[in-house]
Image 1 (cartoon, rainbow, N blue to C red):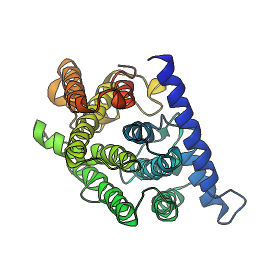
Image 2 (spheres, rainbow, N blue to C red):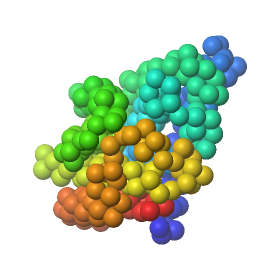
Image 3 (cartoon, helix red, strand yellow):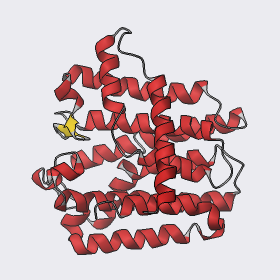
Length: 297
């Protein structure tokens, strides 16, 4: 990964971290335990991949960095809430996340549940109280898009399918349907919301960007499945081999490691093809894509 991209990514991550730290209630404010758990679950961890996609998409059309920071934070808070809930005993029952105990282990299950609820609420509060678009109509559409990406027709729905699929032999299209919702919907939202912070794109450009984000969302999950089967717990920062232990269908269980890698590369090519009309303006999107596809692969 080149030094220019690394410097840009660190700047985006630092900007996001500073904003998140300022928006999360301090631990000296009641209810202190809940606020502590919220900060524990969000700050100082994670690659911030989804916000990086928002920043990269904003580079297509001159979006203001402050607007993208708000959008990136909103998406990251949804992601963080989903991890807190996913790790709970009623879901994936995991004890390690981002190299430290999961929220329900560090605090307790009830606090973890409320932490996820509160992070989700804060996400939409940020989008409601900061101007992130040139018109109220566009901003309302953006809020709707994030809501859909987070709910039963997006991330939560994908998780429901995932839980229902334990021990079942899914077909490749069925697995793809699950991950378009569980993982892909929020990545798609991160891209599309970032782009809408800037100058208006035409319908053809939005369609191309949407196709790009769908390909990248699936590629992200394919790489996750490969890493889960091959990487160590220390490398991942979460429990390795969890999917196999829980008898969950994955791209590796259906295709095998080599074919899964080939699929990730095929999705990368397809994603990049959809960006051709944007030229050099899409350089950051290509770089973030390579960052996630080539991570510890």
